[in-house]
Image (cartoon, rainbow, N blue to C red; front, side, top):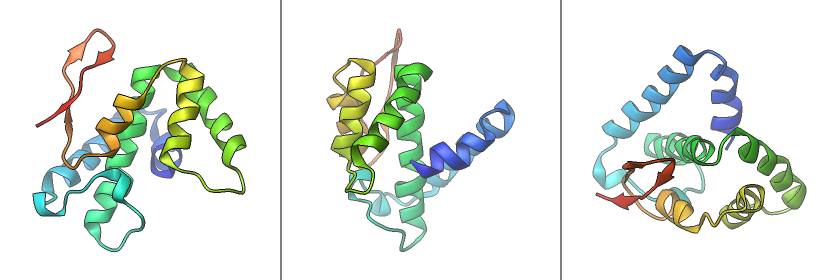
Length: 136
């Protein structure tokens, strides 16, 4: 979340810089050996570069795709709600999902399973503004 909201957020005002940052994440992910790939939900700490790619870069794409899916308004309103619900306590992916579901009035279970529970990258064919994800 920090990678996306802070590191990427600082650069998101400049479309070229933001695009370059996303391409950097994708290049790192493409260079990751398949044997080192893991679900984002398994990430706990950075011990080596593969952890950086999964726990920071791939997770940042989860937030980028979530923002694209929900729109700026719902995305922005979910963040303070998540903070209020979890400040000074334990935060987890389910709590994050619930905050975004309340803000968007949508069930995001499939989205979070797609991005969190599988190694590899989802294939996301475009169908209007909806995702129809599956794994390669």
